Length: 177
Image (tube, rainbow, N blue to C red):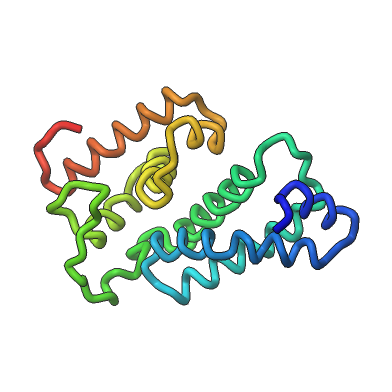
């Protein structure tokens, strides 16, 4: 399989096949991100489609100043933010309609269900929400988070710490982060 750089260059030179290969290569990661984010396959499909439409429209202007995965993840975050804005005051994940499976998220405190966590994450300030989402759903290192959000690695750590502290407060966990 060709490298992202080659596919982007080929697409910029007019190859639709190159874009299809690039989309196929990254489709599952984008879909899985939104599936974790929404817990709704139909919403995840719609958001994934939105990402690739935005990517198609903007990729001609890609300047290779950042790694493609960083660029793509930034589009994911912007799409997720737009989704939150559209659904601002109702449950972000429509979790009131989804029965709680009781499944625990191993990345967080053992007593928290995914429903509790994602409902609480949706209430965080924008930057904290984005950073917590990237750490929970993508398990990205702070260095990558900083690069994506154009902040320092230290700022990403501090925002994550404050976000987790607030989540623990809302979720009733008195343990320190």
